[in-house]
Image 1 (cartoon, rainbow, N blue to C red):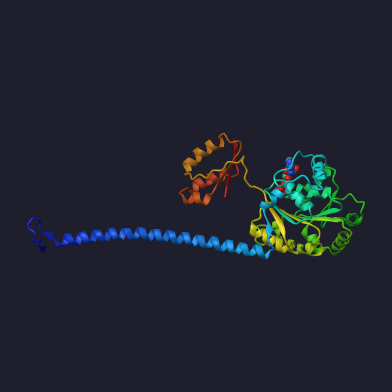
Image 2: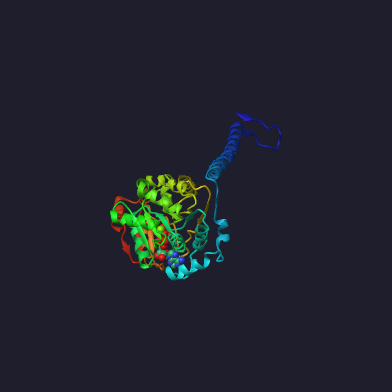
Length: 362
Ligand SMILES: Nc1ncnc2c1ncn2[C@@H]1O[C@H](COP(=O)(O)OP(=O)(O)OP(=O)(O)O)[C@@H](O)[C@H]1O
Ligand SMILES: [Mg+2]
């Protein structure tokens, strides 16, 4: 069928052509709609993400106020001073007793806070020098510092170093002899004692009524200088290393409220810290977090195929970097078409050292 166009100069337009034209315009409109839907979906996802972040922030604020609030790194500057009554002693102990030249970042600030009798949590990377922040104040204070430490091997390492430095320190654990326990108990109460640090596992604190009664007497006599809780993230079930006996450590702050507490960890999120603060019955505390930035480390994420892996690996392992650690996600690699044969080859490579490189599969 044809539709006549009465205008003389125009050729007749077929109905099917008109329908075709309409179809094209509908297609175009649909395309526009699809783009709009995509944009709306993107916006929807954006808003959902924002909502999640806001909810998390609101929860964090309410946790903060529940835990009594805490000061953070902002206040660190006011503690970076050398004119406190104890400053001269602290500097002398650093150089003469610990044989160190200068403080690392946040060590002086933390030491000043605990010397001022305030409670503090310090988050500092592994190897950053957290131990000095309670060992040095222990040397500069009257009486002794009680150190809660989760592992006997960690205590032994520290005791060995302290012994080499000529600092009197001891530990009490399940394998301590009766004579040794008796000696430590006597030292705790002796005002002429040189014993500066007593290391204990949380289990021992929870179980030993005798020790707690000696500690009470020492506290009343003003001999409990402070309490250090190492690996403080172990208090919280939200942390990756929860230790049930850390839960009972709240007794320390309840029974000895005037003894300043210092909690130390390399791995706590603010949520875990708040939880630990509650468990340890710390009303108000200062929290310092040292930088985890390691300027001497270079990170790069690469997405490579198997052939490229062989090639790049050789290049990387002989690269100009001093040491290279290659973390390779095997599952993702297999999903990307790496075969079982490739897997076998990866297995052979795993944990192998080659040149400057070590390969780890995760
Ligand atoms: N100011 C300093 N100057 C030089 N070396 C330091 C200083 N403070 C600490 N160190 C050294 O850093 C090393 C690591 O210290 P420490 O064991 O206290 O680390 P850490 O933060 O407790 O780590 P981890 O999380 O593994 O327990 C030790 O050998 C210590 O002597
Ligand atoms: Mg440590």
